Length: 117
Image 1 (cartoon, rainbow, N blue to C red):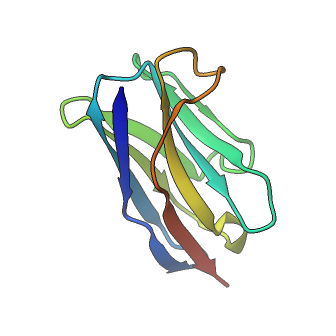
Image 2: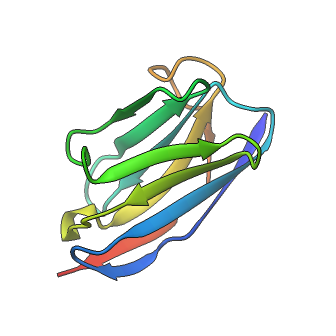
Image 3: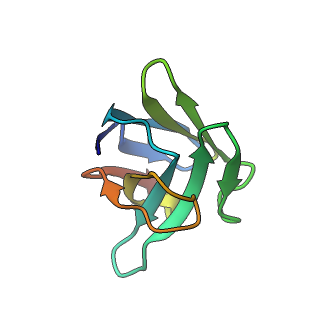
């Protein structure tokens, strides 16, 4: 099992940057990801990273966001640059002990990111 705790959300103007973090407590997952959900919209996978560091991104954030992990600190990061108002959402950290393309069974409580124009 693993517990996930996000931090680092906040408000920023369009074009700005923000980094959010997710501390993982427990066993090390096989894959971790960031999802986001805006009001009235479906949850969207933003990015994921596996144990060996292979990453994948949603088309909407490619070139602007970077997912990374610090294995020594058991912490996942999402560096968000060139933020747009459309990036406003609750961001959730998720983990799985299976494939990155299966279901994620562990979720954090979420951290709000708000981008103003």
